[in-house]
Structure formats: C-alpha cells, structure tokens
Picture 1: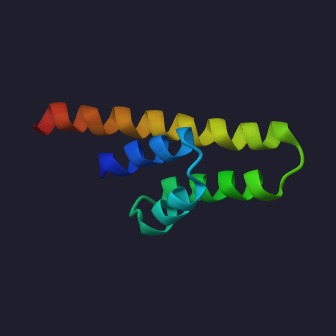
Picture 2 (picture 1 turned 90 degrees about the vertical axis):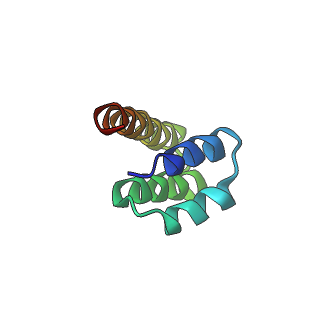
Picture 3 (picture 1 turned 90 degrees about the horizontal axis):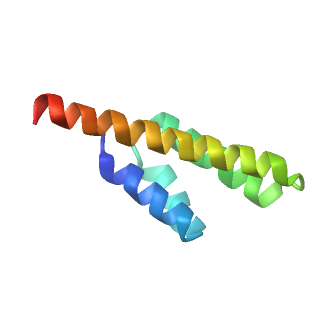
Length: 79
C-alpha cells in the first residue's frame, strides 16, 4: 500500500483539484482507489442528482479512511 496516494486523494478532494485527482486515478497501483475516484468524478461531472454525487464522495472518503487506517496498522506491525 502506498499511503501517499491516499493522502493525495484526500488533499485533492478537499481542495477540489479534480485534474490532479484524475491523474492520481490513472497512476495509482490501488485498483479500488482508482475505481472509487472514477465513480466519484463521473458522478460529479455528469450526474444531476446531488444525492448520487454525495454518495460517491462519501464512498471515496470512507475508502480513504479505511485504507489509511490499514496502512498505519501495517506500519505498526512491521515498522
């Protein structure tokens, strides 16, 4: 796991830097992160129902929280 990808995704999302988030989506080795970003950006750009956009955003944020927690546990176990 590359924790910097999760930190970057959170930063770009917080700052609404969609271009950088798109670049991260392409470059990350984490397929789940890539799909979560893809689904959020697609909803953000094409969906008219705000509840769907909100749902995709919360899904991305929940995954980032989970992945960051798992990577910190790995660091405590092996670091």
